[in-house]
Length: 470
Image (cartoon, rainbow, N blue to C red; front, side, top):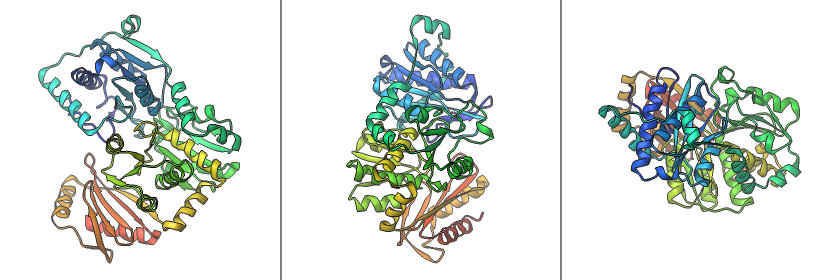
């Protein structure tokens, strides 16, 4: 039995190697022990799942264990987006939720996400308690308590329910769906074969959907809405006279986009356009949260609007904590996970897509036009990330060296500020920055840079490679 560790959002593993029915049962038992210990079990548990291989069966096994521990379960009636499951946890005042998904990971993975009673990702303190419970249960030889699925259904301990209708009702309260419909914006949705399939076409008749069929192999690539994975979406927008393309990751909690020209529109650009939309067109106020690898444009916009700004380590669970503790207007991360005030403290790719459509409908302008108007005011920024293989020993030496003797000048630029909360971020006086971030779980070194020109981005990344020796 491996040591179970939760990552930025949940525990994930390769199906049949780490992510087995035995290991899922152990994690599920620890989760039920946690809910019982914290006095949350009586409120029940919502369980959902995505379209990955065996997701439904893993969800049913989790439901058996919940029922065996005396916890009543609401199990989704089919594949369901993660934000719909999170909304059900919140709206039904459940004690928590479990979503069987590996999100944007490659097809060979599956995962176990825990949702707290507020309808958002389990906070670091919560996942630590579950990890400790897993370890304690293994050490004690804890018996897995389970009620066979058919018996759990018959006894009423497991109830099958439909989660999407209530979730869609919430979305239509948040955005001006009537305005979007009356604007007749032709767009393409790419759910990447994932759990968000069918969502946009159901809400908006002008939507053309690609990759909406069931394909647990996700077309042979990870269901992550990055530029290299959205070439077909880009080509479709260019060839069909569409105004934009919207992409979702495997469980629909992350957003990707293609602009009116068919060009990739990064998560940094989406965050920037939506923050301005919420502030100026929807009249909302509050703080702004970004992770350390997210664009400097958010800093500048927050300053322009006199909004409090918070910067966290990577992982939406850190953003979620701040959304619970403070009046936060919007929080987001480089991966496309974005959350907003007045909803739930959760990433929601479908809602973000609708907000982009609302911004276009209200302004009469395309995404690239909206972004350029903002950058003309605060400055133009370019961004790139490199993922490099690095041996564990070299990674450890690099961390020790940067902790003890960080450079004061990089690529001929004086370092104006540092942020070592998650990796080693060097910030320069003109707003450019370089982040050197060794992965905590893989033999990977990630280099991130943003600057006022593509050439400067490349210079900073090259300097980062030289510093790291890779």
